[in-house]
Length: 382
Image (tube, rainbow, N blue to C red; front, top):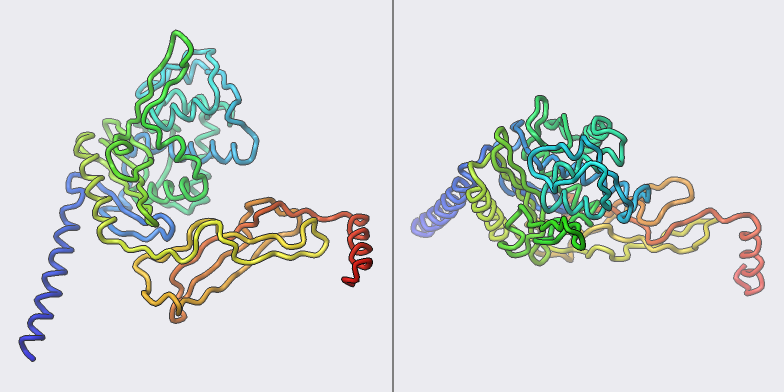
């Protein structure tokens, strides 16, 4: 009996020692960093996650959120042409060499921001959306407030070193999570390894992604690099394998090679140690929404993102689901979040996800309502 107890003790001691040792070796040269699972936001690894530091061009992820919000609202379009100001063309650091008075499409400017980390490109978009960079930066800080982040403040939209411009590894992870979960088109841009701007002109410009992991690491399709003297070398990386998408943030590295190598180690650690159970797939029909005086009688309620549980229970038959709906008066636009689905195991909440509707629901007018009732009467449904 003593031998069995000793064996069990040694087994758990050895397992714990190996786990701790593996974590201690992660990102040793970074000022701070974090690794999270996308859907749940669960922290897998952290190092000085709330330390406020310079984050260089990782700043641009918030600008990307705002650009994509404007695209989704329809206030700007990918084909819209932006006229470059002198202020934008004068931006130093990484750039796509915009000239004052040059016109470039929103789509190409987004490529310039996402692939080449162009400071001139992001300022051009800031001025296009908000009129001035200052007004755009104010909106960036409002976005941070809405996300409930406490360790971030921006003084510009580029990430160039400036007083009162900082963030943390945790806040950057939450910004990256917001970008991917709610504005997933970002991956169409951040996954580009090489492309061209002004392709059919004498100023053809070759874009090569500053994030080399896009071509070097399995499943990596983003997200943003950064470097300044104050920030060091920074990276927000995301990779997806099977049902698992991870986000790794590494800040304050000494050079790009160390940054990339340590980010790969961080992601490897996550994929080797995290188990994700997919409970329901994104887009699954969860229920139907039936409203009186609506143009559509039964609108499918869909899962906005995968419903997953990290390191969850093995007996999925015991998982119970609860749907909570919360929506305003008609009309309700397509893809509007109208509630949540919650998963419980032994009465403990283990996962939750937003629910959206598949179609726009409008209030039906009086005559259409009368026509529907007469039609139902003729069919004998009333």
